[in-house]
Image (cartoon, rainbow, N blue to C red):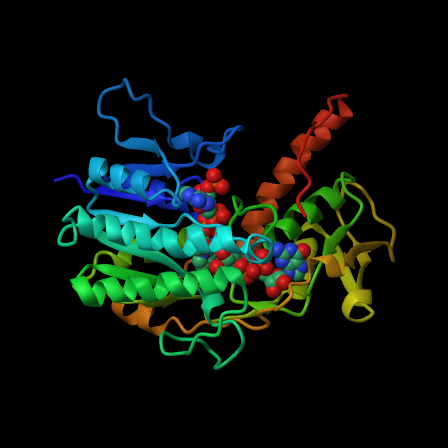
Length: 372
Ligand code: NDP
Ligand code: GDR
């Protein structure tokens, strides 16, 4: 029997890698896609199949997590064996500007999925994965953070995800549903959104090295994150739905790194050594050495500047996960370390910057959005 999966957030970073993984395992994959005025399917275009062809096993459905009737209809039509609820307004800083929308999508959206499965009588059939987050830990209560560490959310995003976490636990306990939370720490990749800090850094370092950009503006350089690779993390999502009993799991590498260090590693990978001088909002990153770089940068040039516009009203300073339970029960360990992650992201962003530089040299204007 072919297994059927429904992925919300299929057009996002994790949705794309998870869809690839499930297709490689022989699943029929369905995805919820938002209507947008410009195409939002760049990350999954390589998976597209002509619906008129024989043996199609990849399908997209228009929908939105804020629309209960739509969710009920899609789940009724697909009747999935597994639902991966990855759809969310996932940017922590933006959630301070759109708190109500974030609560509706990230919090109530999860309820809509659970309730749809229940009222459609699929509670005994459909397994549900909820994309929970290390942001739940927020203000440090304990390090490293495990499944037992108390939560203290520090943003509208984290507060919405806290509701989603507990409603998932509640539906599991109240209705015996196979529903579980993956408490995933930060995971990145070459297709990470350009406004998350890692991708903003690898993209800017590549463009600065090729003379396409002058400077990189960042917020809090002291924050520490436990960064892994999204490819490893979608494996863990799948494993969580293949167990006998539904349980919640922390997924992390067990190593934490400062934002400042991620900057250093990314530039160094390209051949630019950075020296940080000054403190807090006056801190700057200056070129200390420049090797094998196409666009030679003068020593002492300021390439990183702190801009307090990127500070958050409340910050999560330190995340460090303890993945022992996932190591033991799921047999999960990450294949990528931070160095390999940086190498993968920089290689991809350098290639993109080279394409951009080539077009520019030949007189073509490259219209790109400028991430903040
Ligand atoms: P992305 O921001 O890359 O993708 C989010 C996805 O959700 C996109 O497909 C987006 O659609 C979709 N979406 C947003 N709002 C709605 C809505 N109202 N209805 C339906 N779909 C919607 O996130 P990631 O892939 O990085 O993360 C996946 C999930 O995991 C998210 O829930 C995130 O909060 C959570 N998470 C992520 C971590 C990480 O480090 N990446 C760590 C822990 C948890 P569109 O493309 O149209 O914008
Ligand atoms: P995060 O990721 O908030 O951890 O949420 P992000 O990459 O946005 O920030 C990480 C840390 O870097 C600091 N920072 C900056 N962040 C951004 N975006 N832009 C900047 O210029 C900048 N300068 C410094 C931030 O203050 C923060 O401390 C991600 C998302 O994927 C969530 O959906 C997910 O739940 C968590 O990871 C785990």
